[in-house]
Length: 209
Length: 182
Image (cartoon, rainbow over all chains, first blue to last red; front, side, top):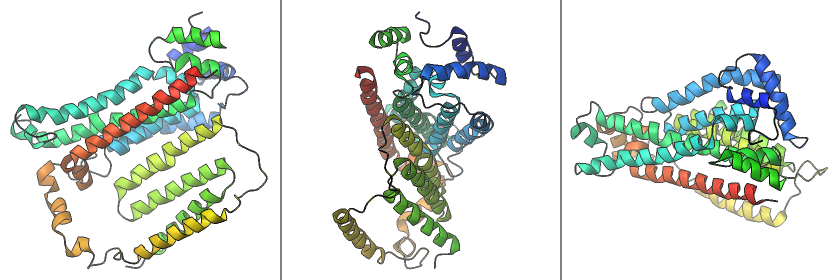
């Protein structure tokens, strides 16, 4: 009962092993139950064309987003653009395979942790130079005082890679999931948009319905 | 430098889609045309040799914004109407027209693209410094990244925190709405 009130048990098992699923058969057995869970008001349409396209395109856009992030110092791009492209890849997957399974796969805690961790990492990179009498975000300190090889370059890249990119991608994904929360049917929204204790929200949702 | 054929076509496309976004009665049509507008702007930025801005416009403007707007209208009720276009709001048109006229008057005082007497070329102390010294100062080849994460790192930190705070605030508000709604 605390497991899952709306979906079949075997569909839940499929959802948890989504990363490894490559065979179309497992996808087929999972998606119809998802559509049932959304009810007649749900807007998710299972489309073989969209799913196949996304399955082919997603690895490339994800890699391109990482390339933009990691190579932002040497070519056009940077943490903001790369983070946005990585976030868009997740949105694409959610559109193709259903928003709720994607939300379950990528937990809220991960998304919020990415955003908060990005701000903390950015602040940490900026604050470390203060320890040796430098100024906030004075990247040159990393090569001059800390003796890191190409320290100022890596500090700048670090700001882009572990600071800006996670913030942007997490906020894009988080906003998408939050806005999407209401419209896949009340039950689905209640059960998995809650942070923290997952089964309690299940029960609350059941009571309200 | 007079604008080439590509610029003219892109300019016409962007202008047309911008007007269509305002004119369409149906919200779904307006959102899709708005995505086309963003794509046109992204290509336009790339033609103007600003690939960093072009990528941001393509990813955020054409991609994320469109998806978020589509999700939003999927959750709201669209009034069914027969007209394709909005009826013209004359007083609003007057204000917007006056504003556009004021903006257009200032456009003529801009130097032409690539003109040799433009301040950025004729008075190059600042811009030339970044182009010449960015690699030496920050260690990265892309001057845009050098300025954003190096020279102006503090501003970028502020922007990142603003994005974080705005996103978290929106999530908290919408989350509360989802969970307190009957």
